Length: 171
Image 1 (cartoon, rainbow, N blue to C red):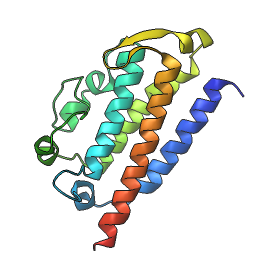
Image 2 (cartoon, rainbow, N blue to C red):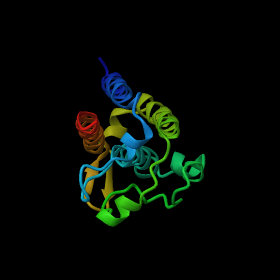
Image 3 (cartoon, helix red, strand yellow):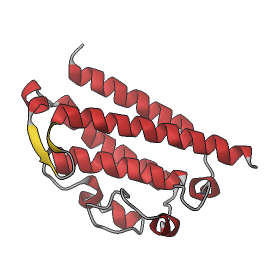
């Protein structure tokens, strides 16, 4: 199996896991916080999609993100800042975050994943070995960043699943 196919299969499994986890969530469940310092499911989902969009489009390909290209920030009534992925938000910023509707988040996720799949399909071994200067991570290869991205997606799906179980156990 080629590495591209492996990555695409992994991403497809992650998409299935995410869809199964969020497909029947109610708006109040998306916005629920376990505590004042906790991120709600909707925020985690938005952050996860934003991170993928930023990595695949902006960091890897040096092109505008889907967030900008298709004006998803307008569709969600959020900041158009392409660097805003939710990383480093304070508890106050998270509490003030207007969680978009699940349908809109999933549509944005699909638009981003389409770009991701196209990028991964066309990756070459040389492209995977390409070194970039990342502001926080220093010099790092595209392959290492893909590993980090997949890890982040996987972790966030786990967080979302945990919060889903928690909020439903309190009803």
